Image 1: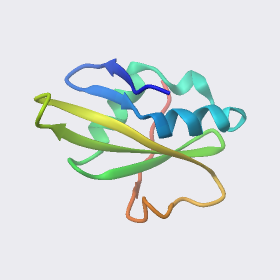
Image 2 (image 1 turned 180 degrees about the vertical axis):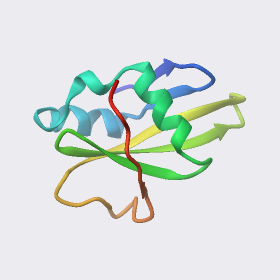
Image 3 (image 1 turned 60 degrees about the horizontal axis):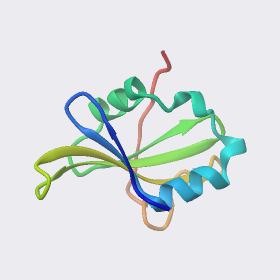
Length: 104
């Protein structure tokens, strides 16, 4: 699976292969209508640089990191993981900060 890049206003949303695999595996837990540019922009606005944030999307938690990519000279919102809503933190995202993302 390849990484997907979605240009947004002032940054690029980066959907990693790991995230895309988990997203496909947990499709029944997610509201896919939540994945649009304006939604990504609200998440980007709430996250601090280099901070992993997580939020509830239907019945799953999604984790992303806001970071500046030096090599590409751009801001990115890197989607890194997706877990069922039974627990918030994962082994690799033990310090994720919970945020609330309002719908349209």
